[in-house]
Structure formats: structure tokens, C-alpha cells
Image 1 (cartoon, each protein chain N blue to C red):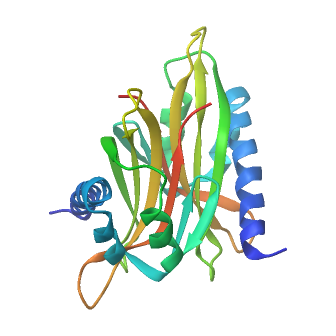
Image 2 (image 1 turned 135 degrees about the horizontal axis):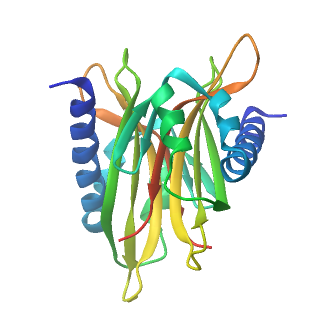
Image 3 (image 1 turned 180 degrees about the vertical axis):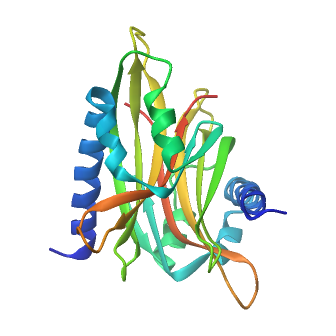
Length: 128
Length: 128
């Protein structure tokens, strides 16, 4: 498989896991972040354990992401670091009107395990 | 200025220049890309000179971007490489209804000039 196809496949699998976990079993996201990871979530910026704290205390009971696009670029071939941008919609609690969102990740391959973790995460709702 | 504030300032200045140029003087974007730059624009992927060709032949006469958010992370402190995510709306030609978009850039500082160029660019309209 050529490197770009492999990157696209990693990004799709990552996205599937990330949003399924976010919606159904959010604590499973813990394993994706490291103490050095940085997240922008709307206007807040969080590092390491703060990220899990933030994600586990969001002020809604249920959320459902519907993914529209997942794109990936290899930003460092030597380390197989990927930039992934996701766009889609989300529904919170019993709201009827979905909100658009965009989220960008930098995924870094861990040499020992061969799996990817999130070094950077930028999330924004997209509205005027 | 602390590094994160400096990065935020670079990202804001970049965004101002990028979208003003896009809307009013698109050829000025040429200087921001390099032969190794990669762009995803909707479903297409473009490299180097293909990027300028694509941006200069988009099928509309006028476009207006309205930027809502600009966020930046330093993804490599050694080289001052930045991840920038922009969300906003755009109006094409005489349409009355803006479209949401999200765009992510990797900006790399050029040692010789001290200015930043775009190594990666992912653009997506955000709709269901």
C-alpha cells in the first residue's frame, strides 16, 4: 500500500474509534493522549491529564457525532506523523438541530507499540 | 512574548493575509506555497505548482471569507512549525447563504527569510 493510502486508512480507523468512543465510552479516549498532548477545545487550552478531565466533564449527558469528511496528510515521513482533519455534525442531548464541527489532530506513531497517539487536538464548533 | 502567544499572533497575521489575498488578489498566495507543499481541497489533492493552478481556476468570480476562529499549536518547537485551524463562512458570487468551511495549515518557518510558508493545507466545506 502506498504511504498516502496507508495514512488515509490510519486516519479513518482513528476517526471511527475516536468518535465511537467519544459517544459511547469516553474513558477509552484516555489511552490516546499523553502527558505532553495539547488540546484546544473551543476557547480553552488543555494539556495532558487536563484533557481527560475536560472531556469527562463536558456539560451534556449524551452526544452523537456524524462524520462527514476525514482527510490525512503525512507531515513527517520519518516518524510517520499525520495531520488529520475531520468535519461533521454533532447532536447533544435531545436537541434536534445538529451543530457543525471541525477537528484537527496530529497523530504520532509510538515506536514501541506501533500505535498512534494524539499529540495535538483542535476542536471547534463551526457557527457564525 | 511567550511562545504560544507568539504562535497565535503569527497564525492571526497569516490568516488575515491569506484570506484577504484569496478574496482580492489570489496570485499573492503563490509565495506561500513551495514545490513540496501539499493541499487537499475538497476531494482533490494537489502538490506544488498544482496548488496555484487549482486556486487560480476555481469556478467562481468572487468569493468572500468571513473568519470565525483561528487557533494555533506549536507542533515542533525546534523548527517553530505551527498547526493552524481556521473556521468560518464563505460567500461565493451572488449567493445569499454562506457556506461553513474549515481549513487546517501546517506552517513552517523558513530559516533564511524568517517568514512562514504552507507545507500542508486541508480545506473542506462543512455540510451534511
